[in-house]
Image (cartoon, rainbow, N blue to C red; front, side, top):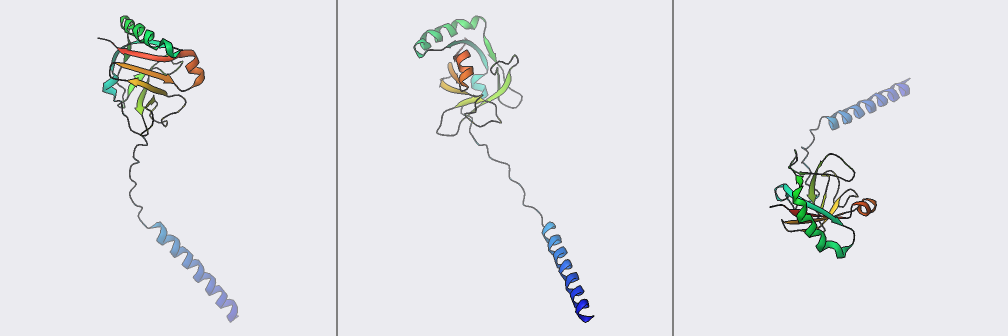
Length: 159
């Protein structure tokens, strides 16, 4: 009987040691969680693109200059870019009838994209910034099927 009693004491001590270890690990305070740094930068600000723009598009690179002239004439019925509720700017995504908030995004030194803030730069729904000088914005759709339908978009700031 002394053997059974010792075995029972060892089992109880083992269980108590396990509970003590579990309690000590759960009573520790967790380190504060640091907010995650942005995965990308936004080289083009909303203030730089908010406004009225003439819009035209081309499919062949040799049509770029002609299309820019056509976009200037588009100021008669301008494409309006407003500020977004979260600091981005409002643009239409492919096949959408309502504008959506987008941001510019880049992982330096790579290309700059315009798209949804919660997607990484270069996502299929993004547009690559081919050119931006404050007066002309040229965007190319990354989705090949969408690019085939819409072409390369040329925005020219309206006076």
